[in-house]
Amino acid sequence: MGQKTHPYGFRLGITKDWNSRWITKKKFKTYITEDSTIRKYIIERFIRAAISKIEIERTEARLTVTIHSARPGIIIGRRGVEVERLRNELALLTKGKDVYINIEEVKTPETDSRIVAQNIARQIEERVSYRRAMKRSVQQAIRMGALGIKVMCKGRLGGAEIARTEWYREGRVPLQTLRADIDYSYVPSKTISGVVSVKVWIYKGNLEIT
Image (cartoon, rainbow, N blue to C red; front, side, top):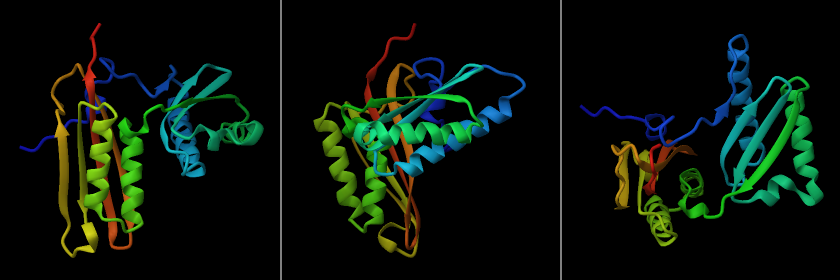
């Protein structure tokens, strides 16, 4: 009853790839901790850059960080000053490793689940009506070509005494189909009355399984 499967983990190795790509035995714990620290640091440093995801690739001597963002100009900075500063900071975090940073632009942020969830969470923190924020996000995603979207908010919505769940769905969101390209994200919204969880599922069509 009520058992849930993470949409990303369910498809990992089938239609989804790992966000961290490296192979090691001895330094597994070190690399996992470093990856988590790097992601947390970049997201907190560029909180307004609408970051979708951060991919990390490693070799023995080199660390490549790929940042997917809807506003790459904020990360790059004027004449590349910010990205060079970030590279030096990541080198310190990783104890002097050779760090390379790639920045890729998210062309349609309206159909990116992470950016949509961040947008709804920020609006809830700013005391915008959660219903209005959810409905607007659903309409924009469908208008920009998404085949289906589901948005769920859970917690003390509107400062109510009792926590509850509200959700909207438009189009198809086939979570049991392995070939379905489901973009899923969870973002917490920290309000005065407590934490409101924002979850977004976006269906973009079926992929071929090779």
